[in-house]
Structures are given as C-alpha cells and as structure tokens.
Length: 96
Image 1 (tube, rainbow, N blue to C red):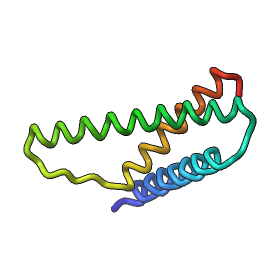
Image 2 (image 1 turned 30 degrees about the horizontal axis):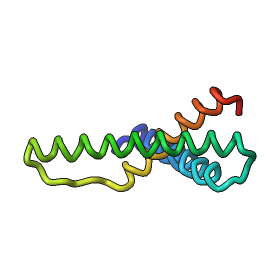
Image 3 (image 1 turned 45 degrees about the vertical axis):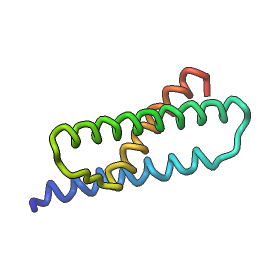
C-alpha cells in the first residue's frame, strides 16, 4: 500500500476516534435543561438516520438477494458523523 494511502487512512481513523470520543463525552456530560434538549434532539435525529439507513440496506439486500453483511465499525462511524452534524445544527439553532 502506498505511503500516501496509509497516511490518509491514519488521518481518517484519528478523526473518527475524535468524533467517537466527542459523542460519548457530550452524551455523558450533565448540563442545563437547554443543553439536555439539544443532546436529546441530536440523539433522536441520529437514531432516526441510522435506523432509516439500515432499513434501506435490508430492503436493498432482500431485493438483490445478497447476504446481509454489516460492518459494526462503519456503523459506529456513521453514528458519530450523524450525531456530530446534528449536534452542531441543534446547538446553533438553540443557541448552545
């Protein structure tokens, strides 16, 4: 594997690790009522997005008659990305 690809994948892995840690810290950090509403909305949007993506994957695999194989690492990163984006959106919307 070329050195550029290894560096790129290392950077991507580091960014995903930071997103995962940020997601856990924001979920566990106590806060005021407004902060709890922001985290609640971001969490519910994340659950809705991932649930919808998984339903579409299942429907696609049933239609194409392929085996259902899902990588939990990829799912975790999708959770982290959707959560981070929705958390930033709701923080901006609610003034957090």
